[in-house]
Image 1 (spheres, rainbow, N blue to C red):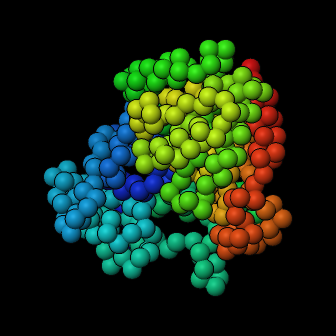
Image 2: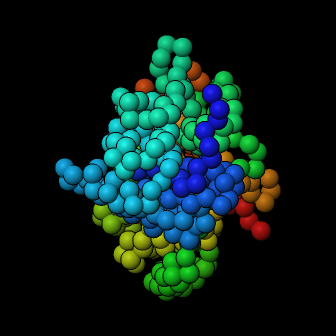
Image 3: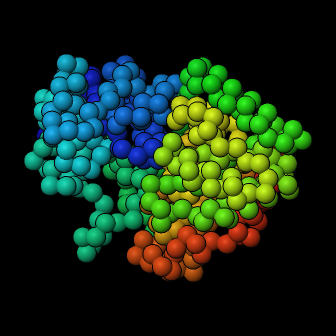
Length: 379
């Protein structure tokens, strides 16, 4: 059978979560480079358009209708006039496959999951173990493999994903392949205003350089205790003379305020200064370090090469192994700290919520990692 024709109008259906969208950017750049002249649109959840502002990956963003019984049909109606000839679904859901079918997109490529194979013209087998369980596969490789099918290139060799320990997993991505984001001039202008107000609101003796703490997360079980974040804020200001900014969504403003109340120094709330997802990008890009739970800002920092300390528990970090740029001294820009490094490599932290609880990560361990990272990343 001859290979399908190259697309002329391609719709890429993006994941719902911030981190997953950022992890998809190497795949999208690969497609853009392979087909430089085609029209590429993206179907995104509300809010993700702010994450993608200022990039050169897409020609148009379509914001999905996210609520209501007719949401799928309404979303299909939005994208149908663009007459896409191909859809690449980086999502796994039945509803997104149905959306592309209702939009009358002739070719629909995606993983055969969520009983949606009948809605796809090109159902791709997802990575599984011999016993049919899901194979441990980093999301960046998971998306890259779908692009291989679109580009008529050999699929990835899943056998490379052989864990040597409980937190590291080799990537099948080519070397020097990284995640990417951009931001607009208005985002930068507003971010500069937020940073100016943050500095003027704190101790005038504190250096203009700053650290960001990100204590939130969609799952409360993935949140490091707030009293330790407060003590870490004190450490960053007193030992490293850094202004400390605490990030959170509007819904996490109270969490941020609790940490500020527990601190002996004067960390600043980014939600209180009107921070948005669009302005968060240049703010993270300019930070000396980000200390975060396993959540979206981790991936934003990696896209800009900002040094990161990521705290994992009880989730397994190998599902979200990401490519990161090295620090000036050549060491990795991300340090991953897990609750139990003695977990056998053939087991997943997800299956041991008590043993791998994030509360088992100690403050001294995080402080030590912060000190080493700041030393390695200093000019």
